[in-house]
Image (spheres, rainbow, N blue to C red):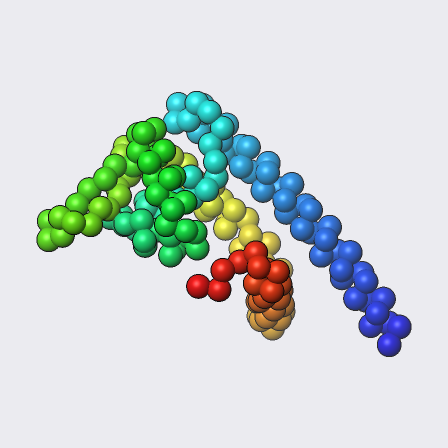
Length: 170
């Protein structure tokens, strides 16, 4: 029993170290991404990554409306509406209507929005490539265990957020 407790303590310490390193890594990646976007003349102020992810959601699903963006991003329609107004004013997205539905407003990327979208996609692709290369050192059986472990961690964290009233259950 002492060995299990000791292993649990070691895993807990490694988990928190990994969380802190992941936060540091993500901050560095975001900073690098925003610097590239500034160098390309796409942004002149600090861009909120949620705004960039809205651009990405639109780029991956255009044409798309506010409700669909909110559902895909797990954000409120009010948040998406506020962000979309800002992105329109900055020239990243434009409103459009479908030929068969003049009532519903949809969003599409402008050329400027497409450039930022592609820069963001490149960042994600490099991250995926690096991660898949990292996973190659594990056997299929180990990968199944890792998948189960990460799913269990995700489920536990989501449930904790719900229990503490910090996440909607939708």
